[in-house]
Amino acid sequence: MAHAHSKYGDFEALREQATALRRAGLSRRQIRDRLHVDNNDILNRLLEGEPPPEWTKRPNAKDDLRDRARELRLKGWTYDQIQVELGCSKGSISLWVRDLPKPERRDSAEQAKLAARKRWEHELAIRDEKRQRTKADSASEIGAMTDRELLMAGAALYWAEGSKDKPYDRRENVLFVNSDPGVIRLYLAWLNLLGVERGRLQYRVMIHMTADVDGAKRYWADLVGVDVATFQKTTIKKHNPKTVRKNVGENYRGCLVIRVSQGAELYRRIEGWWSGMVDSAGRDHAPPLLR
Image (cartoon, rainbow, N blue to C red):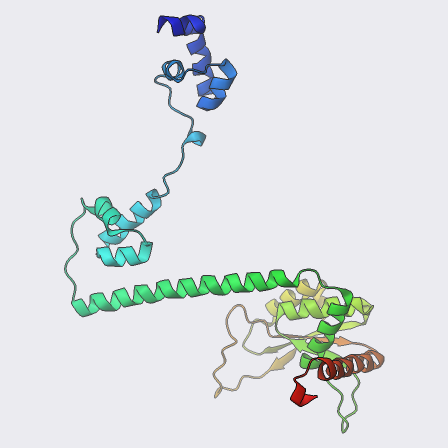
């Protein structure tokens, strides 16, 4: 050991430096590199009695599981139920909760029912994760849209959701109604692509009388980026007491109606785009029997 000490000169002076660096929050590796100490035994002696800084401590991944297991055990859960809930082994659970009192025995039918419910909840979580993964993968397949792709997507969207001219009721108006914020954003991006000036757009909310009308108007105004004062008079739909409505709650904001003023020429172009898409699909992509 004397030989090692001689290599590092004044041991006590070196220890003072190491202690100061440790208290300043440096890790063992940083102190070793700073003081050029390549002997672990010497480094251990230099830092003896000095605790490591908090940032160098690695959290134990099982600490949260252990705490949760103990919490559930105190609520009377069995090992099987805790295993299904946390996904860890019974051996680990046994070690974590062995000092806790055993829960009272429950009716076997009740235990089976609880276990079945937990298994089903676990299965639902797996299904939801798979569902979200599929959606994310599909979204990544789209990537950036070209102008042509947006042109066709908007035309198809309008033909599905917008007002249409009838031979018996000639109305060449561009009027679009929808309750989905994503649909509204795509539709406005499409109108922007077509060069429709924002000043030609008129907005109106259509909503049930029992909803938060003012809140809905503020929501849609923020979404489209206009002053709520520019909205036209709201269309209030009367509630039929015999109808059980499901579109209720704080997320219900009715529908946004968007009208393009002086839109007759634009409507004719939309109908033409749609007709061209139908002809192309029938000619180039339809099954043989439909050609």
